[in-house]
Length: 157
Image (cartoon, rainbow, N blue to C red; front, side):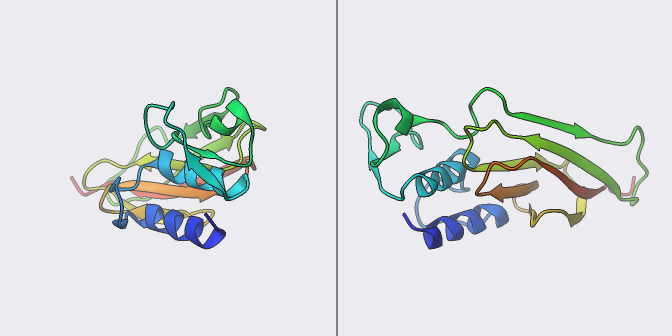
């Protein structure tokens, strides 16, 4: 797996595109696993002792159980969000999500869902709105802490 493949897969996930292979839509666990495999040597293999995807794809260049590390599932990750106390129809407000990944994380992705009928304005940090799945999404090939924001716009009553 090379950077071009990981970038294409991540870009498809960000916008909710259909990928030639399942799962569709692309699941957040699959996109983070793809980034994890790339960051850890690009070579991977199927491990029949792992019961489900995407964790059954492990790095060939990493020994033993370390190859099975699950990005996004390690202890020490934190995500906190903030919203205003009240909102008004058609009036955008800022949603803030603070992300602090644990040091063991190599790659992470973030999704935040919107209620039916709501729209999105500006999204920070190269995030994207996946309209088909009503999700605001971000994808990072690092473990840097970030404060992510986007404008949510409630519908007219």
